[in-house]
Amino acid sequence: MAKKGEKVKILLTAKGTEWDSKMDPRFGRTEFFFIYDEETEKVETYDNRAIVNEAHGAGPKTAQKMSEFGVDVLITGNGPGGNAAAVVTQTGTKVYVGAGDMTVKEAYDAYKNGKLK
Amino acid sequence: MKEIVIISGKGGTGKTSVTASLAYLAGKSIIVADCDVDAADMHLLMKPVNDRKEDFFSGVLAEIDQDKCIKCGKCSNVCRWKAIPIVENKYVVQPLDCEGCGYCSLVCPTDAISMNEQNVGNWIISDVKTNTQMVHARLGIGAENSGKLVAKVKNEAKVLAEKSEKDFIVVDGSPGIGCPVVSSLSGANLVVLVTEPSVSGIHDVKRVYELVKKFGIKAGCIINKADINPDKVKEIHQFLETENIQLIAEIPYDENFTKAMTMGKTIVEYDPDGIGEILKNSWEKIRKI
Image 1 (cartoon, rainbow over the protein chains, first blue to last red):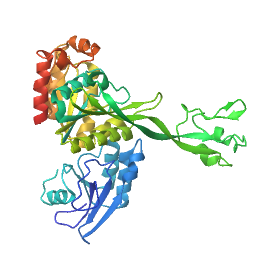
Image 2 (cartoon, rainbow over the protein chains, first blue to last red):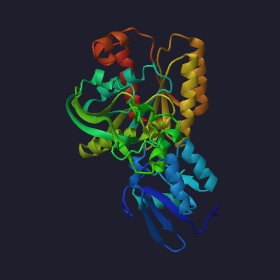
Image 3 (cartoon, one colour):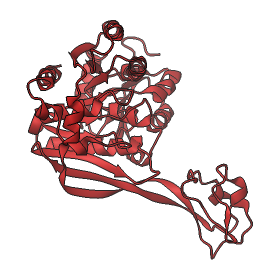
């Protein structure tokens, strides 16, 4: 678990792969992962768009995928819902919501300034 | 642009009647999305015309190529749903029994079984009587609503809303607390709970609110048929207070709801001064939450 001021790896749910891309307010059916590692200052992205073909269980599948990236913090619009939340809790990832209407950069800044719940 | 989702947990509380009324009052400032696809009724009240339809594919079904089949029966043996009986000396997949797991195709020694995507219905964009558009869907018999379909309907509504600079998307959510409801809530800005003062009404609204809480979405509540059981109304008030949910309105039981429905009208059109006035105030409150 990340302590205050510690450099962490953050996953943001996004509609694209750039800092000025819009956030995807959804967790399970997010189009992309935008992953920023504060330590190395490197950005990594993952195309999650194939999730559109899943009739059921999108949340848990995305949560499972997320766990492979070993992130400390998740920033999204709302959610994750019941089943996905159970997975996310298991991995110890800290969840921040309320960033659905922002860009990735704005969401990251809002998180840094303690403006996300 | 904000996404407002109306849900109830229990069916029959008046969710769709309320949703259609709000959609009527909001007029062209919104895009309407009907995500209650299993029992889609919004179209009865919104009078969609000019349908733009597209096929919707979901799930897979096994299909046996009879030319390749050597009738070994392995597929039939492994099928948990007994979906591959022998019909007229051939192994034939029964579409309504097949769950699409793919076990049969895995064990088939001659690769005779393919898993094919199913066209289960349409999703549709229509013009509606309130001078805007509605996104909805129609499923074939035996097909079920899914998170996938709800996400599709909501996404299309969002694209339309952004393109035509609408203020809101008003979503008729599905009943229950399953996958389609999860998908309805995902990405929403506000939830309106429509409930009624009955044992099951309260039980189910509490259950669905558990889910809303997980998503951390703000919620308001409309109590319909609010004069049929004062004790249960009190119980709802207590629940709303504990959970810090805003009470938007209490609507008395009124047979005009049914009369309006039979005429294919929203209650706001049928009874603009009575129930219509209450709903008008409700929409004013909702748009400001």
